[in-house]
Length: 171
Image (tube, rainbow, N blue to C red; front, top):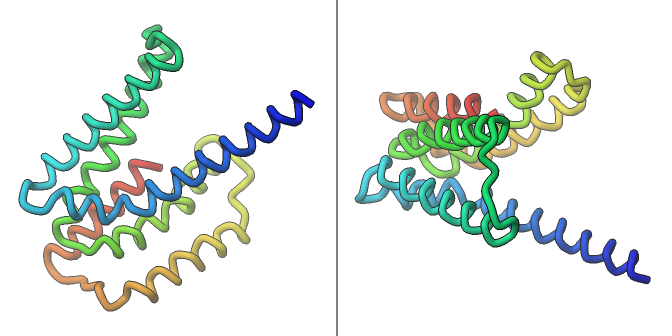
């Protein structure tokens, strides 16, 4: 009986975590746009990363009582910080020039870029033609939805390139 309760609890926690990720990532482009309004993109990203670091550190101390600082842990922290901050900085800059919808469209390439990197650098077999077709179909759908907002002129183009570079860094 206790194993069944633990299994139900685990499924509930997974569902809650999944739901939180969906809510966070689906609202990220619009919050990036809002946080850069009036204050500038750099203030927005520094505040977001600071709040995230504070919350993560608080959770670690509440759940585990100490923050591991051995060599492997420090390397993991550096890699995560580089991917998060390095990946988000170009998004915040690019958001000055493009719509939040287009940010979503460009980030639709994330599974493709991540899959390519996994195939190229760690020889993962999961990069199949059907997965590429599925990912491209999703991106094509997003392009259709947001095509009215798109332009290849001036700062708009640089905004798109900036967000695309964020996808690559993040992957």
